[in-house]
Length: 198
Length: 284
Ligand code: SF4
Ligand code: SF4
Image (cartoon, rainbow over all chains, first blue to last red; front, side):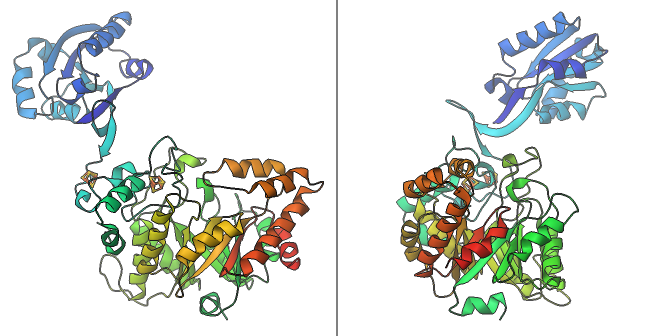
């Protein structure tokens, strides 16, 4: 799913300068799983708005905002949405643009779209949607995403005790791949495999 | 004999590293270079530690004009495949044959932590790309008018653990076309020998990287770097020396003597203290 993180209150208020009323769209897809569009997140943003004298005209919680057709159907029936000039999004950037594709309203992103991530127990960035998956050659672990240098043919020289030189709190992803290569007797294959630039 | 030919000889090779100036005043660079006259080649770093400096290519060309044999360091950090291939062709046009291809320090380690890390190609892919250019075509399969010739080097870190993964990577780089290696800093010749015995290869030369410890403070800085392992004996010598710099010079010189008994050569990283390199070598 797409991991989203709420922007700072300052940035949100800055983007709302001069606005007196907004309509909120919250996404019950990925953003809810990031806890950035759940009940509490909606309450938090509503409070921020009322504290700053911005009226909330209405709230629509959509199953998945990125389903453009569905979003359009639902929102066209919502009178408060129709009335609003400015829409606040508790969704990823795709959700914002999906609504923007059929609406001329002012669109305000409240969240930063951070990563394609796995959820629980912790959020882990696993994929950067490169469009050309190499997982079959890398023991199911993505170095394009999880190695800060995106090295696809093997590690740099920076791993010490299996940790990454850039963030010693994190495992070097190539060491993780290496351990699996060893387990699966695939070291020779790794040595002789060259992943071409794509 | 040029560097490429020397790689085929039995000569114990000595190279050192120079960093370009931050700015346009190259006088200190040239002064430091003068101390490296007798060396087999001189590396020029490519925005090392991910900090912005004058380009390696320009400084290599200046070294070449002054009669040095430069090694152009190219990282895959800042340029995409168009710019990287173009840089390689430019080097060749300027008469620079030696290139050291490395991944480079990540932007987060440097002066511009939010700079876009490019990494469009990885090290293996760029080594192969250089070899492809030599055959008269580029990565897009387009024909070149005139093809370059390179002597290609890469890096290896003896302190990386698990060590066998680094050994494997070295082999992979040789398969891709690397002809020589320069290692990250080592301080313990005996420990390095164990690693060297695993990686030595008759077809490539591996130069052990060494660093001049100029002061106790500098030693503390080095020790904070991942994988840097300074033997207690050396630490004690630096800490108790009345003149730590000359002790550091002695230590370097002794290390080189030890390395001469088995290594293919050394690569000296004096980090601004290049003026002492002739001294280190004269103690041999
Ligand atoms: S290679 Fe990595 S980034 Fe690309 S699709 Fe596969 S998992 Fe995602
Ligand atoms: S240490 Fe490992 S994960 Fe970190 S940059 Fe190097 S290869 Fe990538």
